[in-house]
Length: 531
Image (cartoon, rainbow, N blue to C red; front, side, top):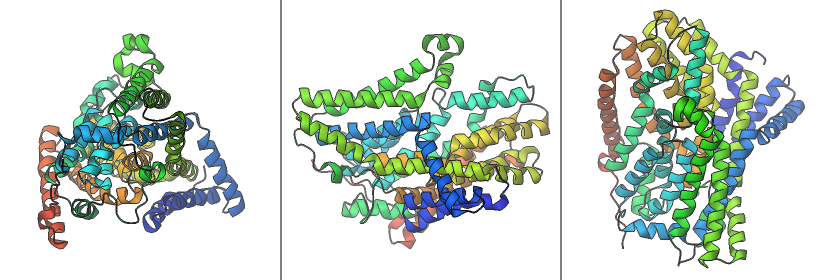
């Protein structure tokens, strides 16, 4: 890895700026990867191009990545069968009597997002696919659905006592303690860090607030007002990552809810069993409990098994129930996979830009700046939160940020105090919260892309509408870490104060934007679908 200094920020910044400016995500991502390739090739554009292609190929054949790409194609195939057979329309009709309003649909999306806590990818898939026909019917914008989907995926999985995240997180904490020769339980430290993950907690609460009140601000106010008053869940000219209606045509009218329910349940249960099986099953459970199982599991392989089983069950049902012929089912599978081509291209390039940022040293450069500033004492959580936010935003990875920052944050906080206490717990929580912030806001993050994908939203529209809410929650988080720096170390004081500040910021911004755009209080009307 060469020392490019401040130029190491070039690949991610080129990708992010171009993505937002041109709204051409694939072009922007490729440009970012190419810039990185040119840099590590001594600024030679020819060898830089071959390096770019090498990174793309390497990421395409990476074991984890190829499972996720295949999984996405299979999910597309399953969605194609469910949609074309009329299953999605049938579940929408079945829930119509219970969820008939835009408020009810938004709240149901939030509740599903909280309940599906065991994996962020699975959360994104199920919430997006399940809720899309319901939110479309009740005139909730695709941007809002993508926001609900994204902001209840990683924050919930990261906070859950049992999830695919916790094993990884606890392992990183344990490694840091081991290097310091500290005899302290990593899982206990993880538990103590949870109340200090201000961004994650506040982000989940903010989704609930805006879903229930229908008071919005920023670009989301326009999106929601458009959807309610014009019935357009997508803006004119939007390019959703999943174009189900265009690719598959109109669904059959005589669809059955069984063709929706059983494939989705199959996806959930086979994925859960896959995590149990690949994580060591009963032997691992006996050794260290469910956390040990999930920590050792291959969630990508489990998701691949679950998505394949989903397609098999959906294919079987549409034939047995005579909703489709074999030819129609095969056509729906192929067309469903076609939906995922653009999304998978973006995902592959997002992984490739991570290769580029690793090669030019983006993350170490940011970390070195912080270390040279001589960060000490109770200010460690604030500093590591800000750095983690920046690293995760510019690299598009939360887990990568965790792996970079925890080995620095824990020794820094421990070295100042000499014991494992609030400073260490808050530093751990700040790393996790900051990593998830970037995971939400960055247009090159895989979970941001997948939220757009499964919600059927235009990707850049999702990013631009979500950012103001993420910045609100993170801004309150920054203020709480500042208070921590001044000596307020009790989360029991900080969290309630954070909730009050969050509500105040939301209220002020919705009032201000509402007045600016002529929508009183920033409140969009509640839409009730007709029978």
